[in-house]
Length: 121
Image (cartoon, rainbow, N blue to C red; front, side):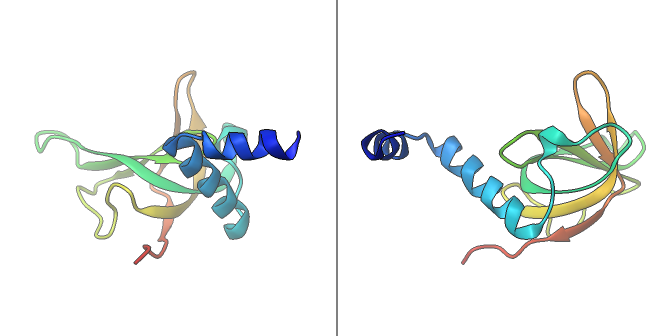
């Protein structure tokens, strides 16, 4: 790719493309694998940004569910028996380690170990 084409691509990138590139770079720094390459049944460590937090209604079994995005894909992370974990909020970057379960439409890690990454600022 020519230098002009590369500069043009850099100038015209969307905010989501910029965020995805930053997450991919962070992945290499932390030493984890991209979510898109993880396979069913594997013990994985992934890092990403919390995009969505879902709380189950009080009438059901307590569970905290997040969607973690790393620039290559998403994984749902579910802590059974928890309604809240201090420090986990949308926009927070974190590393999770656990056994990956895959269905045709979604990747899930139940009750993983986790590490909250420092926030900017």
